[in-house]
Image 1: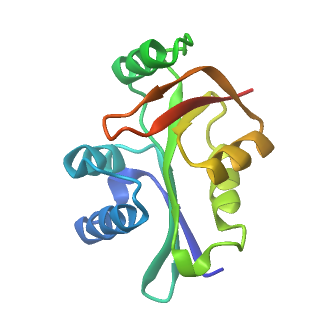
Image 2: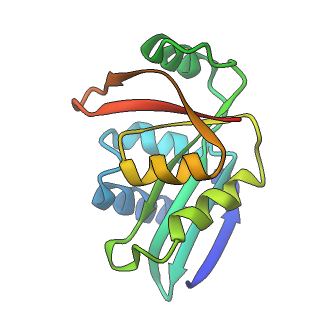
Image 3: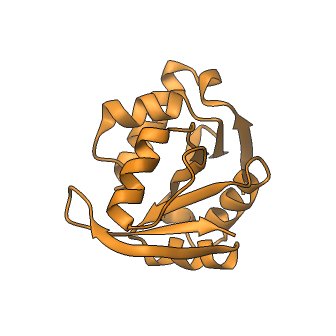
Amino acid sequence: MGIMHIRAGKFLTEQELDECISFLQEQGAVQYFKTARQRLKSALITVTLTEGPNLVGMGVIKDRSPKYNEKISERSGYPLHLDMCEIGYIGVAEACRGQGLATQIVKQLLKYEERIYATTSNLHMMYIFRREGFYPQGHPWRSKEGKELTLWVKQ
């Protein structure tokens, strides 16, 4: 593993934001770039992993968003607390997968927030979330892109 950088989203430079958005796009983790950029800038915590000049992994704890939490509650049928945070934008470069980097990112993020949830359609992330004390809640729903999402809440 290279170097792990931990900071609030407001401390990311414009170049770093661009790199994160490009990285997440390559990982298939974002479709709405304007929203993703805003959520990255307002993130409570960002974790980025770099090897030399290259971003090879990342994840964030998104800022509290009661309105978004209401939407997730409606879609999943599970009553989220409105003050909970979402963990997300977790990705690892294909060449670096299988080294436990996503798990390290999640573990690092969990040091900063306890009342947290995630939504995912990724089976590998579901496995990591379960191992880190998250449990599926409510029922699956379809994203705008047609993916089946599930809600995972940290217990």
